[in-house]
Image (tube, rainbow, N blue to C red; front, side):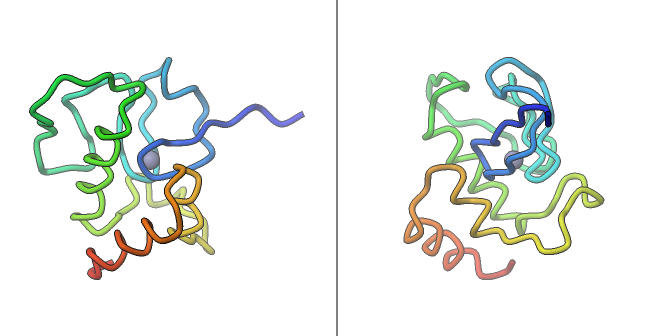
Length: 112
Ligand SMILES: [Zn+2]
């Protein structure tokens, strides 16, 4: 049987080895390191959300990190893990965003 995989709440990558709530795994796609609130590997921007949040549950925080990822062109942190037929829209649907929300995001960051 295949090992259970987990979904990244930032980018929707669905092959994380550990539960984001219980690990310090770095998402190979967006580069977000779970279990930290002040360190975002893939970013040149400091992650300072300016309010108290629960990093395990706060969608507002994840959407902030998602925006940072978009601002940098949605680059893969571990490029070698990027599937050849990678579809960003399909992947983002795993986060629970609606198609129109994703379209809006993609529209706002046309550079990718
Ligand atoms: Zn991710």
